[in-house]
Each structure stands twice: as structure tokens, then as C-alpha cells.
Amino acid sequence: MFPILNIGPLAIQTPGLLIVIGVYVSILIVEKQPYRHTLKASDLSNLIFVYLLSTIIIGRLSYVFQYPSIFIENPLSLFSISPSFFDINSGLILSLLIALVFIQKKKLPILIVLDSISLPLLVFLVFLFLSLFASGNFYGKPSTIPWAITLWGTTRHPLQLYYLIGLIPLIGINVYTSRQNYQTGDLFFQTIFTVSILVIFLDYFNGNPNNKIASFNILQIIAWILMITLIIVKMIKRKSANR
Image (cartoon, rainbow, N blue to C red; front, side, top):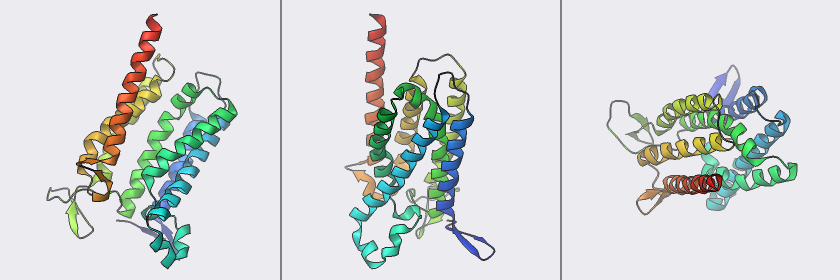
């Protein structure tokens, strides 16, 4: 859609620039938001940086393994910051393991950490979908609706914009909840639960046939698993609290 931003003689890749801005803003939010628990802002900033950097590296390597011919023909593409050459799903999911190792090594209270990064995560997702919109990736199904966008030779649902619009109320809910009295871990669980609901509804409009298993999109399956897991964890916590 807007892959290149021309500034004088410079031609900057817009998707990559938006990702960099998203990382910066997310870290800035971590450092600025008030803490109700003793937790170093530097530890959280480093955690977010490690997670996002791991997402980029793993997402690129996963894409290389899936489509090696592209990089054999053009080896310099390996260093491209375009989201077109990333497997975002693999990057976001597998990087969680690296983040958990970081948390364990630093001996950070995991539930407090998760609560603290919930808002920065939502904000980063906003920039991620802006980046995907700029690159034309993560596209929607063909459609003739009035607000359809022309992409890859046909008019389609603006799936990236659907997610952007859906994330705005989730950010508002997160900010509101953070100002209330809540049990440790609930803020993060709420964030993941609401994002999962968003994915289940919106990814119906996903137009990439490679993201499907049977009649379901991969992201929808992951979202269902997360929701069921969170419900089970919540039930276990309630039973433990009642004993």
C-alpha cells in the first residue's frame, strides 16, 4: 500500500520504519507508566527489546526455511526489513520461550511482569498492523463492500484496518482496568483473552489460503487454545482461593 516513504533523496521502507517506531513507543510506555509493584523499568524495557528482537530474527529464519529459493536467488533479501519476508506468527509465538528464559534468569515475578507489559504489547500490535497495511501483507478476503481496498489484483476486506479499529477499545479497557484494584496477573490475562476474541472474529476475513488448517485459520486455532487455557487457569485460581 505505502511500501516506500520518500524523504528528499532518501527512500525509506515504511513497514520497517513503523516496526522500529512501535518498538520505541512500547519501550517508552514501559518506562513512563506508573508501577504499583517494585519492578525496575530497565528490566521490562530489556525484556521487551529481547522479545521483539527475537521475534524479528525468528520470523525471518522461519520464512527462510519455508521459502529458501527466494534468498538463494537474492541473498541480500535476508537483511531486508520488509515484513513481506517475515513469518510473523512463528516469530511472535516462539519468541515467548526466549522471553521466559530472560524472566527466569533475571528472577522477575512473572505475573507482575506480564501485567506491566500488557499495554505496551497492545500498542506494539497497533504499529505492527500499520506496518502490515503499509506492506500489503496480512490481507483480507476478496470483497465488493464499499470500504474494500484494491490489493493484489482485486478489492479486498481491509483486514489490517479491522484489527487497528478493534485494538483501540482494547487499549481503553486495559488503561481503565490498570487503574482499578485487580489481582496480579488479571490485567495480562484480560488482555490476551480480549485479543483472542478479536482474532477469532476478525481472522474470518483473512484472505491468505496458506494460513488455514481445514476450514479454520491458524491464528483462530491459537486464539481458541489461549482462551480455553486462560479459562482453565482462572478456574484453578478460584478453586485455590476458596480453599
